[in-house]
Length: 221
Image (cartoon, rainbow, N blue to C red; front, side, top):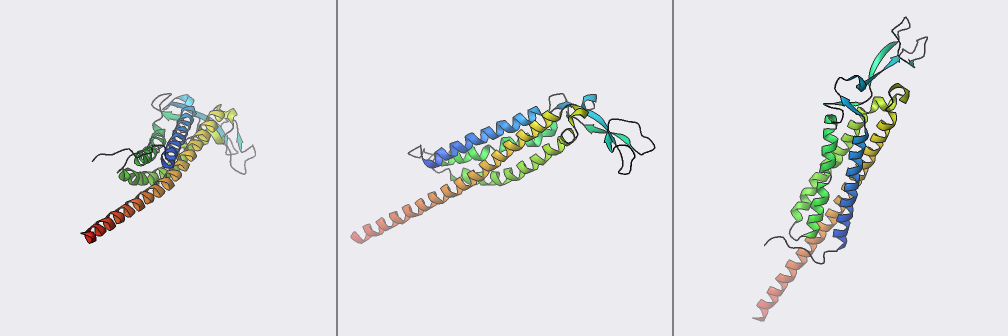
């Protein structure tokens, strides 16, 4: 027999799964919005970089300052990244993994929602546990990736490049969305474990009741 909808539909598990899915979608939108805000540029274009003067600790001039030629004090100009490079001004090849992980983070919520809605769909919930473990790890890694890509335009003062606000806002939104997605993964793991154990307990009790009835019917004959 195929899958059948469990009744009643509006059970606590189904409502909880729907709420977690809604929160996961909100986290996904927040993450993608953060990536969209981060400044981007085409590989090799001048707007991708900015120059700063870096000096050794024993230099006579300030250690960090505006661009200047290398002098006797050892200071020298260095190029830093003011925007994330890509094939165009709007593409985000370097954000491929963070975007992919954010999309995959929605799959466990769908699996759990289908699992609590339909009968004989516990296999999907078991598969969702694997996705949850992988997603949590990859989401943490993706936060580090976005942090590295926006480090220069966040650490150096905005007067050097003019993208400080966008870089800070983009990273903050992505981190907030990723934290929300991770929280959803943990909530889904707890919900799926409790639901699966409850279903298995009911199956065991049902089998024991049927066996007991068959035994009683045999004695009566």
